[in-house]
Length: 379
Image (cartoon, rainbow, N blue to C red; front, side):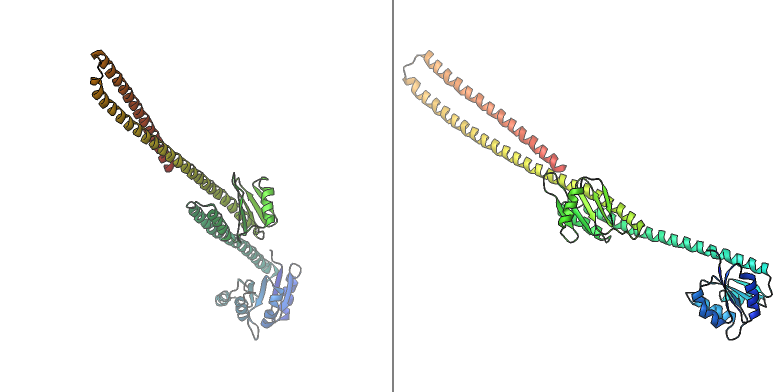
């Protein structure tokens, strides 16, 4: 803002008249005839520059300037001393109490105009610097806020990598969002099961659940008033208190929320995949156990049959050895009977070899299933 308001302070009316004649056409000008009067009107008038006489009774210019600079409401005002003397000592005294410039009486219009022009540039430069400082401060605070928020997000991502339970995952997301002072409602959807709902206070209201159902297929992001709804394939998130009073923070939080839902969705998918694999592993274990039980039951039965056959053939051989010699058969007949019995025994042995082949085949199946189960466990 350019220089427009000047307060002139001098105990000599003639000096004030000269200043008024020089400046009244270009500036909004106010006069004060003493130091105390200056201090009484300065805050209400709020000048940008004070032309302050040094030599005044009761309170000189240096004392007035000291009071002005001690007051936080007036410390920003530029002070230019006006004095009949301009020695180095006096100028140093003026500088020491906080004055920005010094002009020596008598002075002409052009000299005063140039002085005020320089002060006007100082005012503009100060305002520009203040604006830059304000912007830099805002940027710094935003950067610190963003750094803190990113720290929360990184911590959340590290923690959910260890979660293998849907309810715990949902509560972790609710807790993370609450660290940003956000009131959240969450819906987790599943392929073959009803959706589950979670909220900061534990329960989603019926209207929120209806809203999830109505908008889950209407796009990724919905913003209305100070609320925001984020949709992903398996997750919807409703925030009830977005910071609309701060557009920078609003945009930053919106980006954070979308990212948090995205990484949570991936972890939810991982949990559901692990549960599906665990179910498949359980079923495969049941199949392996069933095959193992059936196989060993069959082997036990075949072993029993083998032992029974061996006992039958042994008794048959013993009976033949006892009875054939007493049957009055000729040699050819005896040989025929012995050959017939031998062939029967050989056929039985062949069947036993087949049983061994079956046993080997079942053992190979068991090994394949065990290998498949081991691979599943490693995955």
